[in-house]
Image (cartoon, rainbow, N blue to C red):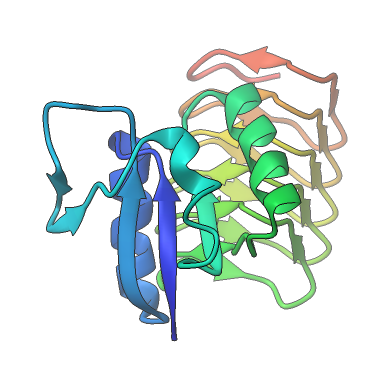
Length: 187
């Protein structure tokens, strides 16, 4: 068991906090956030501002970035890796992640997600509730597969892309970097 520092105490940070609690592998979880209106979120302290990760390195071995903005999230993950933090993968206990898949540092796999055989999820990705990434897909660094989205077999989702809620990416589709697929769209 170890301590975890969550950078970002907004909606995504709260979801990741609860998921991390359910994993049962963390002794202590605290936040960094630039908010000034609160100092405790869901019973966990905000112990400093976003940039304070540098001064807290000796107190926390693990840190994860929980910012919804794909580019900012990926940039900050790279920064905390340079400082020397270990950046975990957080997986909800009610997700199915194939043992034959690969999940990159700082990615979050939430409740009821399916990551199938041969799928590769890059660094700093969000695979949100009730979504799926089928066999032999590649989801590159910093992408967000939103709630209920389906990425069918053998697709490539470019880095920093956004696959909207309930969207479907048909088998074999290749999406360029920073691609935005609107909610409910089929491509």
